[in-house]
Amino acid sequence: MPDLDFRIEGAEVLEYAVVPTILFKLRVENLDGEPVRSVSLNAQVRIAAAQRHYERSEQGRLLELFGEPDGWGKTLGSLLWTHTVVQVPPFSGSTVVDMPITCTYDLEVVAARYFHALEGGDVPLEFLFSGTVFYAGEGGRLQVARISWEKEAEFRMPVRLWKDTMEHYFPNSAWLRLRRDAFDRLYDYKVHMGLPTWEAAVESLLRASEEEVER
Image 1 (cartoon, rainbow, N blue to C red):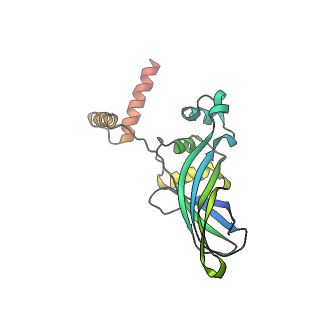
Image 2 (spheres, helix red, strand yellow):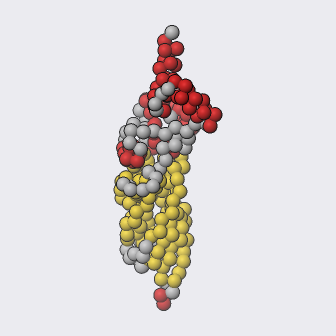
């Protein structure tokens, strides 16, 4: 029965896609050496947040997720990023396949809020694999075996890669989701003040708030 091993060899921005996507290069190796017909691979991707250092400015942006830094020994844990499925074609020995991971700039999503808060360095990622492997048994008969969740891989993804992905798909932009009633109030303000863009409406409100604070 095949004994599969997994390793992430790199990652890059997928240039053309409907949604922001990072393309991970996944090496799949059969340690037993027999030909593999195909693999239906499930991957859970987690952020090992406790395995990196955080600058003071980053700590401030992460208060919503982990609370005060003094308590991070208890609150700073692993975060789920996403799940994905990869179909691996036939191979002998080892092969490298593309594993696309879609991203979001919706800051209501915990993983997006975490990535957005970081300034530089790497993000320690954990890939947990399971799925089904199809291979030829005795006499060439098709055999099926399960891949356990014990199969894992680690990769330190540069923070710059996530930011470059967002910049590629949303140049010089960020997304903010509002409740419908809050949006309607902002829309009415924009129209009433004769402001040409949403940026102008938000900047006008910020200036008014700053002036109020200074009084």
